[in-house]
Length: 215
Image (cartoon, rainbow, N blue to C red; front, side, top):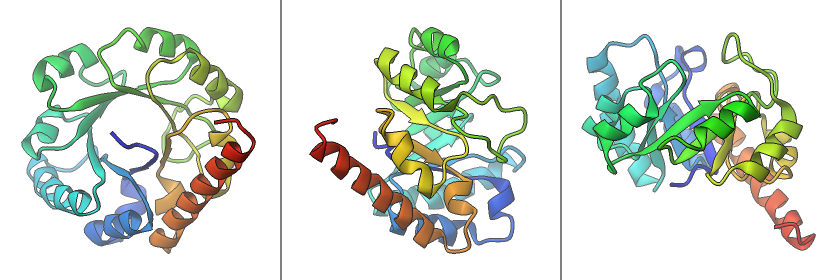
């Protein structure tokens, strides 16, 4: 499981682009995991797209995570599945997937995080760290809450929500080592360059934290 630079697909940023080439450019730029997240596509189309994306992610040694649909994740031999509060509950997902998939779960507060730590999940998405246009009715948690979440979680956290390339340093300085981006990569015309900027900021921040003895 390598979710350090975690791309989440979004209809709004992909509707006028070639899906496969755009994801390939993000992978070339340094993305380590791709979450396939589409809500309105027919199941057959999602399956066919996922088969091709599975090949792409494998060629870059990157993870493939499927949002919500554990059946599709299993069918294409994905690495993981990610669910939220309105999706199939994590314990039910685990019954279906067994150990064939790792399971991610989204929370929007420290209280929800404490509850999620008792669930059969492998990582937890925590946010929204910043204001975001990707999701409606999101809940803003902020950097301080992310810092507290890192202290209490014994499972890997993925910071999510409004994360842009220039915000990578302050996110990593909370102690969180995984960042999820959608508009932060797909919102730019040059997707590969945006991903490269994220990777550069990620590596440089970790280098600086190492020099300061904070890792």
